Amino acid sequence: MKSGMVEKEGFAALVLRLRAEGISDLDLLTAVEQTPRSQFVPPTLAEEAYSSRSIPIDCGAFMEGADLAVRLLYHLQVKPGHRVLEIGTGSGFTAAVMGRRAERVLTVDRYRTLVTGAQARMDALGLRNVVIRQADGVNGMPGEGTFDRILVTGAFTAMPRFYADQLTHGGSMIAPLMVDEENCLMVRLTKMGSRFEREDLFPVPYLPLVPHIAAAM
Image (tube, rainbow, N blue to C red):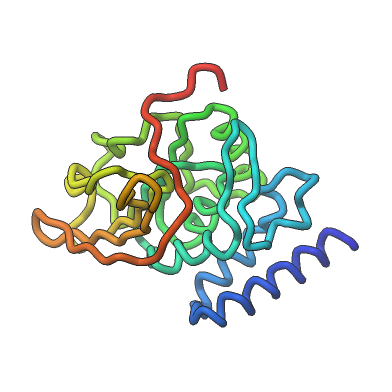
């Protein structure tokens, strides 16, 4: 089957699954459709690009299954004009989708290999408002101003209250939180004054964040 047909059929199947979950945000789905997911997975796994399974990528990392990736973006609610911070670039797929909606996306990863690969994909798609850096994002990106939305894809072991200073008033972040040694829950934290309002969303399979940039990759 030709790659274009695989892309179209994969996206159509994903939309059907998302609608069954109640996710039918046309602007978001359009941004996903405009971001060919098969370009973000290893070539040998192109036919799995739109599956719900996680996909291994370089540096021992994984990218979320398509369903989870879009579900996260649906709950993040990125709007035109927003400044977004993402901790954990991975393949760059979620950053690329957000780049089609936001004014600016700053995404960071501890692995130079992943940063380089994601940058090449952004260049190929012409997404110049997505800035990619190799950085230790455990404490966010202090000194970069405030953001309207923050997406984190590595788990915190305690409430990341220090992120409050990096959010605008009314801004929100979505991040995994370890609720015990084995279970992880995606939560939405909305900044109200100097505190967070917490909303528990759904269980996720993320591992705790690892500090420091990677030395070898």
